[in-house]
Length: 391
Image (cartoon, rainbow, N blue to C red):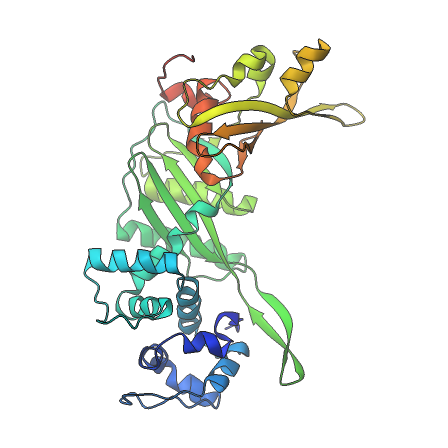
């Protein structure tokens, strides 16, 4: 079992942020581990436990192969959920689900997180995972191959467990370890999936007590998948091609037993050539107040693999001023748009590639951008949708 880097609790001040009684409740199951590391914990019935915080921090900063995985996981979750924003969320969900929180107002953010871990760790894990959903800014798009989008309900616990086992088999074979988790977040017209899994092992040099040592740990990775119920599109945010292919196969297998499959759904930039500036019409899109084309990548290929890149604050405005027009046969591969959204006066970049990927500045821009792409015929996903004409 690899050791892990526990930077989060390597500062005694961080440990002081948890009340002694709650810290003891958190660490007590690992009493033998701490004793083996020459760090004796107070007795479990000690009403006012007194810790050697310096020694405790030293154990966390120098993990070894005996460091319990569950302890590592608990500490990482508690530390990352010990913010004011996370605390408000945890208190709300505890009230909603009837999870008891100790009386009194002597709770730090870490105290709240510790109590959730001790009393309902599944809820803490889910709320921790949810924050990673809105960090994904680049997606590849895939379309169901059937004539109509298949119906998908949130999977049962049994289905989710079977899916996790299938994912684990691949992760283990590819040296990423097992114990993956799939979190599900249903919404009205979307189902969000977040896959938590390990990455390949990392080794780093470390200095402890003036001596150089090596620590070994396995970083965690969060991948995001979004299934759009209305048009059968699956969006995937995952760094590696093998991971994306894994999700396409295993999600189809476990969530769509009718044999549904997914294939890449390329976007097309032909509307820029066919309709020019009219392809940027946005009057029928709620949340968008302006669109400008600012960059084009044209791959002519040939024996010299020529690539032409054009940039301007407003390319169509520049073309009009110079009485220039793009060739109708120009092989457009990438377009960058500056889009002004109703929540900000400053425009944000959106990059569309004629493969099947979009890069957003903010993940929350995706719904409006996708609707615009569908309406302006940049995406064939519109085959399942009916929209009003542009204004």
